[in-house]
Image (cartoon, rainbow, N blue to C red; front, side, top):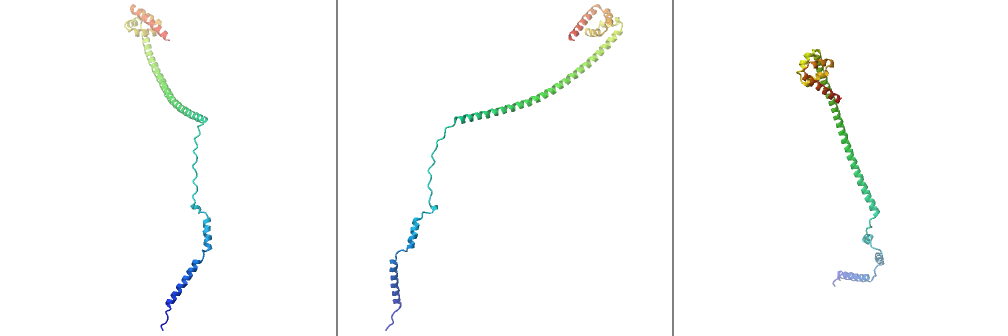
Length: 207
């Protein structure tokens, strides 16, 4: 007799056991733990990060309020006052600049007047010195003619120019001039006397 084959028998036994276990597993109801976890997941809300906040509605458009007449008037008054102040400041600056210019002009005029005054004084001094020199020259001539004899002086006076003759006769002593005039030619004596009278009249009027 041949010995029985063990391997095919073992395989058949294991296959039968597997079928029995599979039927047992299919007959077992689902685990209660899984049911509780599923119910908890269904009851819990979604995570906060996944929930989007509701979008707020747009703000209602409020119409602009009408401008206040008092505020507008106050603003206009302030602008006028500001413009007036700027105008006053500009005028003050212009006046200050004009005062500076006037002071400078006044200083220049003062210096010019002082220069002209000094020049006039120098001219007057020069004129006085010249007049004194001229007077000294006339006085020298007068002394010369007064020292001469009347006839000799008359001879010279008959030939002198009338302006020179009048200046000499005006400075001579009347007592010494009379004999000289009496010794001159009659026509020259009359002309010299008339010119001398007019010369003294003009000098008196000027004084």
